[in-house]
Length: 387
Image (spheres, rainbow, N blue to C red):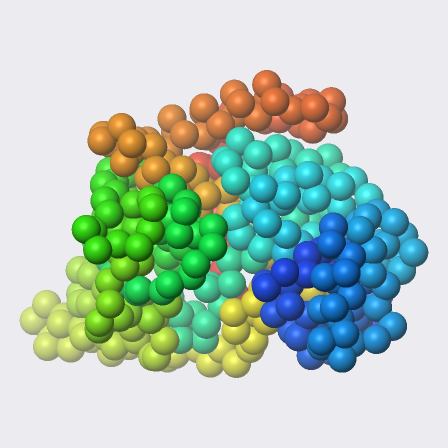
């Protein structure tokens, strides 16, 4: 995992440019304006009128608007970029920012493909800048508390997520292929890695579309992942399941040698411990995580990383395998067979090397001992983010 440059001034607000003025960009506008840790100095969007309207609607003044990231960043002496563009734009815009000397906090996914994510990891290495992916659904106090207390279960054998919602989005989502896997499941897959502190080995996945579905692509799926410690993670979900819906984080069950934990995705998790011959096993003292949640949490960890040099849990190298879980699940559903992470990473690495247009980034890719060693052995999820 690469090291990255830190900010010499650890107390002043970080001067940031927001890249993207769409629906998610507007949500980030309010978060950035409310944070004492950052100062919004620029807003960049290819649609200049939309960017200006977003600032006007939010009542924000004295922020430079433009259509060119480098020009706006230079004009405002920006210190970091928040990338909220559409996924297809993540790779080129992240590379532009990194080689302009700017660290980036980028909305998930890192890129549309694992091969592009590998390119971004190499670009972060060569630029010496932090690229962090905002997996915002890691940042819940009750989730951090659940992770803290998993030790009470002993060895974990099974983790399950049920995700059942029925949103009518309209627009591009209802026309997407693999809509649940590609657009939403990465959140749960990433949380499974976070909870287990293990990495995925393989997956068998099936996708289907119920007869009443209003989605063009398959909106329901079940996937079974094997992890390095032997645990199995089962994800079962649907985006066209009205009635008794789960939370947006899904409903979780973690089964271990000494007991079971359940989490509804919102409230405090429940634990039931049954010790062998002892009746009950006391839970360890819970850790009080009073920090920011969701995208406020990812912003807080990003700023902390820039000030301290502590590698954040969403650093690009650590995030690649969450994206690889999605790509492997899609491939498994298409081929109707079990797919290994090693296969997905190897194919992505070959594509990344062949497609890379920047000599320095290609050299960094070629310098890796192997893609498996860099990401399967060296990429860890990291400590629980407490914001």
